[in-house]
Image (cartoon, rainbow, N blue to C red; front, side, top):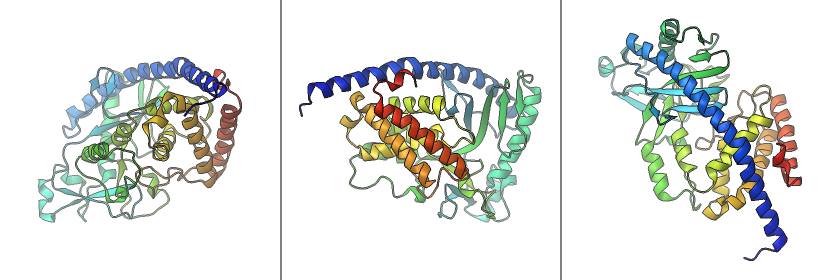
Length: 365
């Protein structure tokens, strides 16, 4: 299809603006985050080494692969989550019956096998491996390790939460989450994925993602907030971070995400944290379904994709609902204040209007 010359000129101007923004703002953010990761991980590795000495079942899986750390997720430039993978579940079965949105439980396959489990003292009378009990033990160990480690003057445990959170140099917050890797399994609550009749993702990638599986994290589940469920303390949160990252390979998808994260940090870091980089990532995955062809993720289309995602974000904020990509019954806005979501919708609209009406908006954003 031939495009008029003025449209081509506008398109190449937009590509120039985006590349300039990426080179200046996005890369500055990335290099700053990389520096922080190195600093934070040095401290956390030291703390976890101390934990391992006290309790060999909690072996640190935080390994540096040329500056990339397995199990590390950047929540914001000052906030990180580090997942440490526990030794195998062994005689436990994965149970996902959909009663706890975003969560599942691990249950003994046979009561007589209790003593064979590596985690025997964390198994409840009903045979469930309690996420909270494991986290509580881990929290005690980390607190002791913080007092003994080489960085004890610059690391503190954050109290008043059941999560294991550290404040490092009074500047950074790191959550350390015990987890199990569930490879070769796929949860029933995500069985609708992938949606039929959409050419994205390619069947080979779907097979890869499902073989890779997902993680079960010992953390407070957003899907259970306000629910006084007997299972609440025993349930594990489902996480698909590796699957999501795999799906975003190819085209300009990752570039698109980096720009969205930068815009979020600079303009949407609001009280109560209504919009996170994870919301951006989730809406980017939905955008991949709406635009399933590789040509739609060419660098000339990035501006359209970003505008589409921001408009979708406004819609979600106004409806006060943002469904998780793999677990649509899980609302990622659960627990956020309605006034915070409303204020965020206005801010996102301001940002989007600027991008839609001013071809040089990125110069000052």
